[in-house]
Length: 104
DNA sequence: CAGTTGACACAAG
DNA sequence: GCTTGTGCCAACT
Image (cartoon, rainbow, N blue to C red; front, side, top):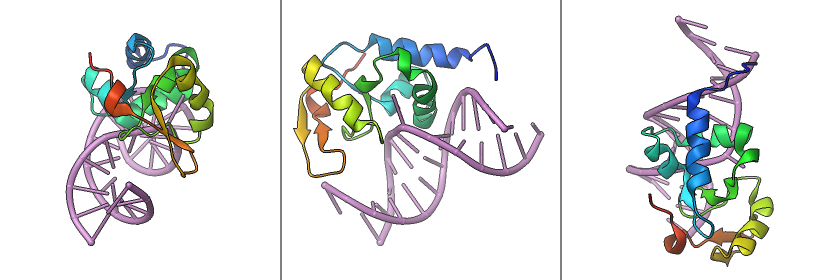
């Protein structure tokens, strides 16, 4: 495996690290900031290097938490004061992205 | 170089 | 509002 991660990775981490507490941004928004449309590419970076950034501030369109990591992100939102809404889905909640959408 | 994968977004039904 | 299908992008095999 490559020891030198691509610069794209550092760019994504920089944007995520720039998101202030209590706010969230969608994968598509992060990709747009980077000048790319690869929302999936952003998720790919999070899956590999997200452990070093507040990945919970990056959510899917509509304010849904990252698949398979909703339970891990929920306490983070409550701790940061991010407005969330309880639902009956398997995730159990949703983010009020309409109120805390971070825009650069 | 071609194929597969993934913490996605958007359009249509 | 939810599900399905298609499209995009970057990294890995």
